[in-house]
Length: 121
Image (cartoon, rainbow, N blue to C red):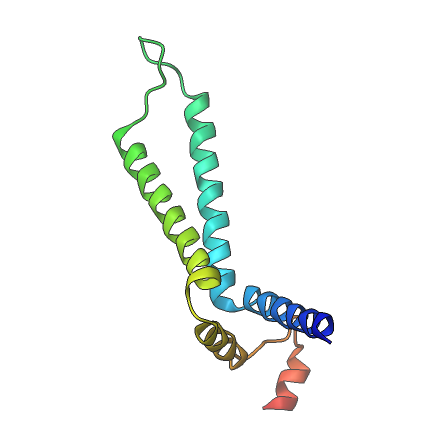
């Protein structure tokens, strides 16, 4: 009986983890991570294509360094938030995130024609 219970428990935990991954809060964190990494990669490729200074090193402007530092800080915070949600906060708090997301209105993905809009009005 225990192996069946363990299997059921694993399936429920897997379902809840997948459900948590699809919440708006997690999706915003993931999008922040993607956008920040993309900007960092663009900044690195831009630095590599820059012309070298007299001493042979690539010159990075002070504004670019500050921007780079801010991006790294943002990436670190987003990854930390993601980690906290999945590994630090309690199961009750995770369930609250899922419950809050469940209350959101889901808009249809297909465009609605003017005729359909008039029917609902």
